[in-house]
Amino acid sequence: MLSLEASASDNDRKKKHSIRRIGRIAELVNAKAYLEVGVALGRTFRFLDFPRKVGVDPNFKFDYEAHRRDGIDFFEMTSDDYFSDKAGSDKFDIIFLDGLHVFAQTYRDFENSIAHAHDRTVWLIDDVVPSDELSSLPNRGEVRRRRREMGIESGVWHGDIYKVMFAIHDFHPEYSFVTIKGGGNPQSIVWKAKRENVKPALGSMQAIEQLDYAEFVKRKETLNLRTEEEAMQILAASLQQQPASA
Image (cartoon, rainbow, N blue to C red; front, side, top):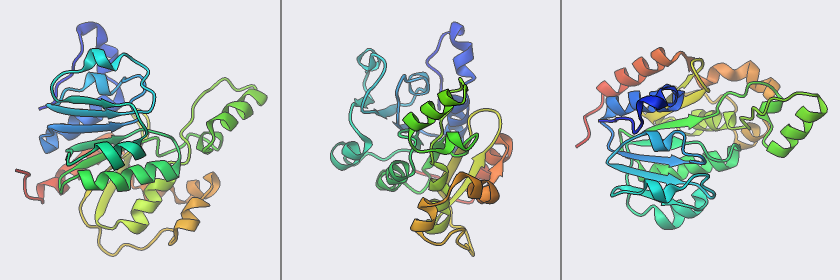
């Protein structure tokens, strides 16, 4: 069972959407092993408690050694290096992908993580719905420059991770997904459950790579947008049809 490593003074962090959603998923799958790609300050990772926790980031922005204990591992390296050299035989119940905000890397993280999943593993993928056209650009430096030129102070940046969900939709019919919109940053939940009669949204990886923000807006229903409550109900109903993990 999941609990939160936090004191009463940390109530605001307990309410963070990622922590809340991961907690709800954990209860549904009785999660014991958790992988987070893209830990940064650890604002999600540090406040989740599982018997097995792995954090991967090329540049941790907190003293991760102070958080080590049996069952917790930190890998200060790229996710590519982790999956190719360090992941070993680990299998995870929940995999949170919150790394580099670009399609190619996040999709590669998803595909690489499949080898470390089982039939009841659930993924949570962050930043899947950009807030505007600038937010959708894959180059963060360009986003900052253009915002400054426009006199906009916002630092919001999602990148083009939205393309990942089109790739999963078109090329991974063995996985189902819902995308949470509202109540926090947009995130997609992905789990193994075959979708029947899948009709490709774009049909080729080239078309997905070229998908711009304006076209995404026209096709955003492909992400299966739901409220958080609806998303959790859909996931729970699907998991109930699967055999429980050992």
